[in-house]
Image (tube, rainbow, N blue to C red; front, side, top):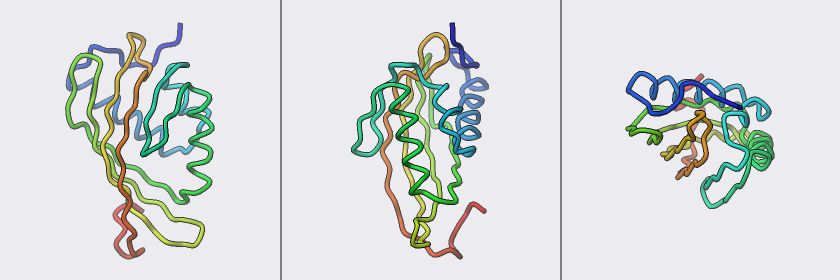
Length: 137
C-alpha cells in the first residue's frame, strides 16, 4: 500500500513537515515525482480548472511548467486539524516573453490515512512584477 509520510492525524511538527516536503517537491518541477504525493483518484481545483486523478495532475504540472519558467515557490502552514491543512503560498515565474509574475494564494488540503492528498483546492492571483522586485532568486 502506498504511503507518503508523515501520516495523519497531524500535529504542528508533522503538519509543517508535510508543507515543507510539498514545497521542496514542487520546486523540483518534476511531475513524475510530485504526482506520487496524490491519491490515484485525487480531486483538485486549481484556479478555474478541475482536475481528477493522479494522471491528470501529471499532465497539468507538465503544462504548467512549460508556461511558468524559472519557477520558485514558498509555502507556509496556515492551520491544520486531523487530516486537513490550510496553506498560504507565493511563487514567482517568468513567461515566455520574459515578464515576471508573483502568484499568491491559498490551498486547502485533505489527506487519506496513508498520507496521500485526496483533495487540493487552490485559489491563486497573479501580479506582474519587475525583475528587480523579485523575492526569490
